[in-house]
Amino acid sequence: MGALSHIRVLDLSRILAGPWAGQMLADLGADVIKVERPGAGDDTRSWGPPYLKDEAGENTSVAAYYLCANRNKRSITIDITCAEGQALVKKLAAESDVVIENFKLGGLAQYGLDYASLKVVNPRLVYCSITGFGQDGPYAPRAGYDFLIQGLGGLMSLTGHPDGEEGGGPMKVGVALTDILTGLYATNAIQAALAWRERSGEGQFIDMALLDVQVACLANQAMNYLTTGQNPKRLGNAHPNIVPYQDFPTADGYMILAIGNDGQFARFCAEAGQPELAADARYASNRARVENRASLIPALKRLTIERSTADWIAALEAKAVPCGPINTLADVFADPQVQARGLKVDMPHPVAGSVALVANPMRFSATPVEYRSAPPALGEHTGQILQETLGLASAEIDSLRRAGVI
Image (cartoon, rainbow, N blue to C red; front, side):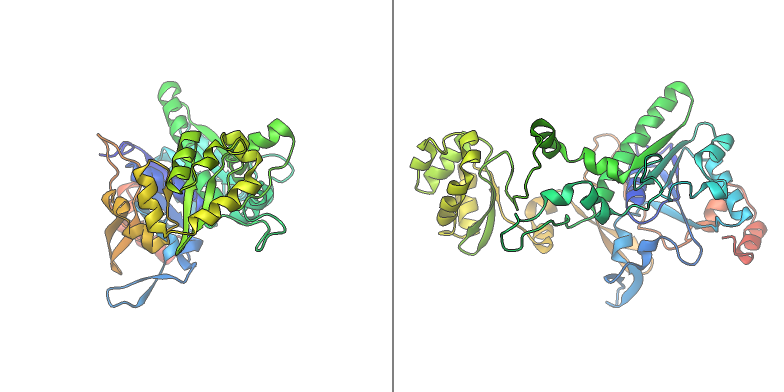
């Protein structure tokens, strides 16, 4: 039994941040009921190509994007714009511990599915609302998208090559990182609220905003600014506070050096045949290397390009100098450490026969993550949920289906 197998989650969210939180809770054992629009469902179901292929190698209608955030859930289709659909959601909320939604500010109030309304039917409910900008402030009514938040929240000002260099300019991160981080923060907040409920008996409202999370996750770069009042500059793959800590060219590609202390730097210089660099006052300490990176980095690049990536990694790992390759995703999933840790899981799928998914990285000694079911088909569990959770008879379910409520 999973750590959260006693928890039921009503997931009214779609796209990524909310579904990511729902999948995390589902991986931990929670019964997550994904509520979707009849006939359409979560927007990401159609966000392709690429699409999952069936056993004959032909495309299915299941977008790869949808598969990344919806395993271990049950799908029910309900039209929340009609009174009958709203009544069903309220009944499900009354039988749930958590609601997750990412509608625009006030979007669910018109349907009587906001926190104030659902709290009436379930005072113990933990209700997590995920929006772009939160429940207050001048931007609260705006829709929020990861790309926009990466720009507005400062991340893109830190990402990319410096102005004036080839390819210079702001750059977004290659995945929707703000959405992912918001989903992770939401999961933490939900579990904290559940822990509080155990002591108080009361549920509560959680206000999660993409912008808040993005600013919070600026981490050391935010502190660099708050400490100095100076905007950090884009450094490409370099680090603002550690040198050398970036990519370097090799004879056949690139490698990463992640040197974090003076001893590691000295061992690198000795292996590179230039021990005098580590003794040079300009480079002997990290502080000096940061101040003199403009002269040091070109000198190191002239050294690293003399050997292949594999040769460097073998030599430097033997001397405990942190380094590594820059892998493609094909390289990642072929890597022996990734394989040893089981980071790709194959699950049965009703259309494709099998689907490969990325494993959950959390490891528990007593309550391990379980891979119970692949991301569900649209409305796959509608009848089951209405019958088992709400006690509706088959005739009632058929009537709702004929009326287009489900």
